[in-house]
Image 1: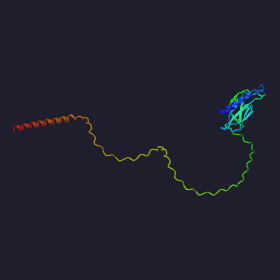
Image 2: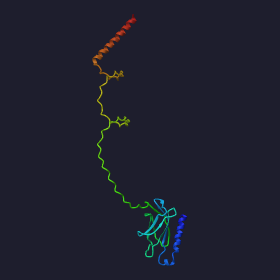
Image 3: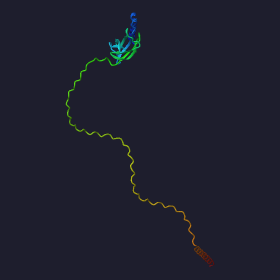
Length: 224
């Protein structure tokens, strides 16, 4: 708390104790509020009016001083009113402050007030706007010359692969291949049927005759 706030609070407390005993017998001590007031984040200028309201009625006013938005506000309920426990709201230059307080008899309350919106603008009658003179519609102009052809655009991205096509027709038959190598010999065939008995006998006789003839010739040759 700044020295100015402390001083203002002390002044308020002195005022409470300085009330004559004859008056205090009829009226209760006020609730004194001390702090700073600001509008839109900036300290209120000296001379700005700070108001306290109880039951939507103005209960007290004060002006800002000290160059830093300081104020001292004495809220006295008077002889025929009762503010005990009631909510006190505040205005800075006619703009509602975000803060409120509860009125307490004889209390010194430190409360910084913040308001938005700036000082209310004076009621000024706004002149009606003059009607604009009618301007005849202009006729459409002739078409302009055709512009040059634009540059060729960049090559687009590669497209997705197409679907698989149907099977093609069968091709022509190829030429005959060369002859293969000679195969291996086959297995021996089964034995043939035996000849007739007569032929066997004839053959045997001829064989005997031949042997005998050969033996006789051999013998005759040795005798010679």
